[in-house]
Image (cartoon, rainbow over all chains, first blue to last red; front, side, top):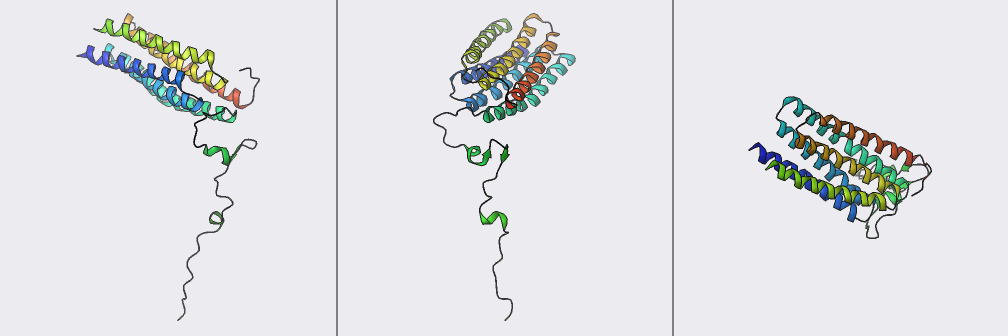
Length: 137
Length: 90
C-alpha cells in the first residue's frame, strides 16, 4: 500500500517538473515562462518530498520533509515576484500576441511610480454629489 | 515496484534538467536565465529526494534543504543586481 502511494507521489512530482521544463523551453516570453516554471516546479518538489516522507515513515524524516515543503511554499512566490519585477523593469520584450499590458500606460519607469489611471477624471477628486432635491416646500 | 518507478522518475527528471539547461544556454535575456536556474535548483531538490529513497539514506534531505535555501538567495541576489542596473552581457 505504502509502495503505491510513494510511487504515485514520485511520478506526479516528476511529471510536474517535466511539464515545467517543457513550459520553460516552449513558451514565448519571460512572464509566460515564469508562469510555467515557478508554480509547477515548486509543486513537483513538494510532491517528491511527500513521497520521501511516506517512504521512510519516520517522524524525524517527516518533519524534515515538511520543513522543506513549507520552505519551498514560502520562498518560491517571493523569488518569482522579485524576478518578474526585475524583468519588467529591464524592459524585456513581451510576446507579439500579448493583448494587454496594464502596467505600460500607468507605470513611470524613471520614478518607479505607479498611477491608478484615474487621476485626470473628475470622479477621483470630487466625491459623488448628492442629487439636489428641493428641501423647502 | 519502487526501483522501477525510481528509474522512470530519474529519466523524467533528467529530461526536465536537459530542457531547463537548453533554456539556460539559449535564453535571450538575463532574467530568462535566472528563471531557468531557479527551475534547475528545484529539479535538483527533487533529484536529491529521489536519491534519498533510492539509497535509503535519509540524511540526504539536509542537502535538499541547503540547495533550496541557496537557490532562493541566488534568485534574490540576481534580481537585486538586475534592478540596480549592474553591468550586463546577455
